[in-house]
Figure (cartoon, rainbow, N blue to C red):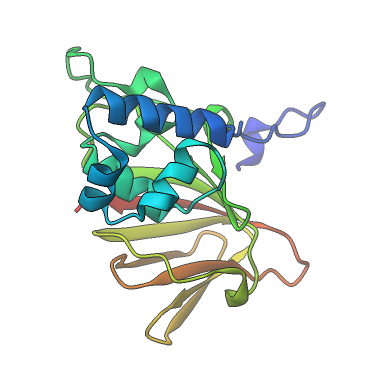
Length: 207
């Protein structure tokens, strides 16, 4: 984060994290509102029924990939799983919205902590997201992350290696960027020599 946002007398606040029980409860409310069973949502989203059940019961933290797949199958913006105020109530389309990273509710998977941004802009064609990268080894992941669309990332602090399932990788540092096809399996890894976490801003297209 830029130094002009930090007062000399205070350290930067960490963005708030959602309890996974809150995310699971919102997923359940949206599914029930659409009169869908877990089995039907599983068939639509491609996410295993057992995983969806554990998500709703807050028994497991899941990746962005699975949350996004469930949101897409429910035809809602993923931001609605983090804040009920993002639900489209028929309000007039705004010209622009503004949000602060420090206030954006997020979700931790253990390897990443991610915070969807600008969720109150209805009918978004892109999903911007602030993320903190904790993981440093491929072995920390069960599989590569894949989702439809394209992805743009800019490093805010630290250094990041984006490893692709093709065997290719890309190492980028602060103020450097990457743009890639997010349907190709990929993983973000922090690789700062001092062991620090990395911060990135990512923008994903929705298809």
